Image (cartoon, rainbow, N blue to C red; front, side, top):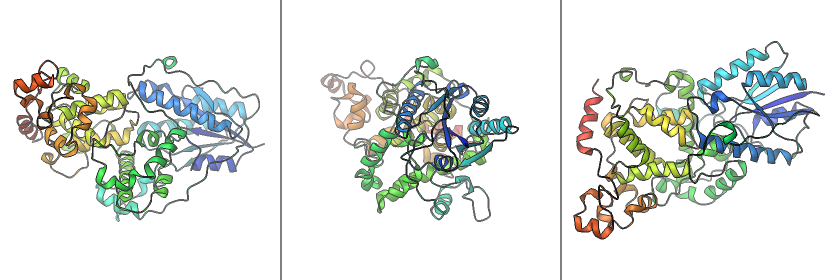
Length: 465
């Protein structure tokens, strides 16, 4: 009887799962396992909201595996130790898993390989995390890694694609007598839920969301993806982060048209940032642009940072975005750009502090994407545009992308009765208008903590290094 282990990591689904498909085809008995690793759960990017989403995903995955006459095995500890123990328990001769790109994932994979080196176990890495089978192999014509998105995108569109795989209807059984363990609670892991109204995790919810998006909103995505009030974005990012959906399957299912093409471009950004971190692992902690490393005089004010985190900067679009993050564990992408620009440019606070706050609360917190986007908006990454192009005026952004104030009023109820003409800059309301709106600036809603025009000039000086 040939036994294989399928090590689930960020690929918590049954549909279009190359590692699952290979393990199933090559074994008489199959051990689907997820290892709860404290180095991740309590590590640099620890997150109660994201861990709860993970637990939802694991519960959903276990339910799907039960329908295939098997179960999800749970282990808690260092994967190199727990997988080695599982090999000894089951006599497994193969270990299948989906390849990943982050420095931690690669280091963890090497530790597993070294531990199993003398145990006669064949390790097989498979694609499935990204649209491209190997996003890091989408090179320049000279064979070098890409650092300009436009060039990467063109090469990526021409890259070969694998066929999408169906979900299995049945799977090989578990070895008899194998302890499965239970999926723990969030409190049992020593974490707390900090988000009030998060989305539910799991492949079932992910596929429902995918069907809804592809069945309508994707057609208008090119025009609507920046519209804050309508929010016709896919909201698939948390499910992609945990592999509840295959990005390759999503691409394959996209219809033709300008909207689907624009969404395909977003999938490419995900692959682009993955290959960037793969080839430049130091980006996880340092600026891609060497001239800025240790050279920018960042503002270290804890008071300013707290105002930003709590959504009380006095700029409605910034505050609405930050309160959406706290409420949902998610934020509209346009709002992410505005709040990121405000932190790094208006407040002059180190992009790494914003990166860590996002990773604490975001359900879709992905190291490669989050890091790439923060370096992009912080003007320290691969983006070739000059600094002034990434200094966003929050009021003008609100007028352009939330002209009716739907998004701002949704997340800032204290501004519900503020007239449209003052909503982007409520501090300009005359006193009688403030009284009529029931919103006194400084009491019901804060005055701006910084003047945008002055802050813009300070930002341009700060980056002259």
